[in-house]
Length: 86
Image (cartoon, rainbow, N blue to C red; front, side):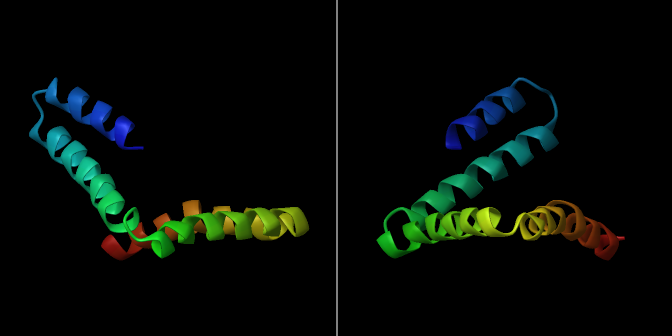
């Protein structure tokens, strides 16, 4: 994940757009900050794994719940954010 943000940062350096560089830098710093926060603490490192396993178990037993989860996370939540910002 950090590798792709570094690639985006290098691509942003090739443009003349300060906005592109700002976004790429923030994205890189966000990922590096998450590594600094999560990696040293074993308990925090397990949280994403437990959540992924839980979602996988839910997908096996109830596919509709997973479709609702994905739709809510990637459609409804961004729409709510857009409506709030307008």
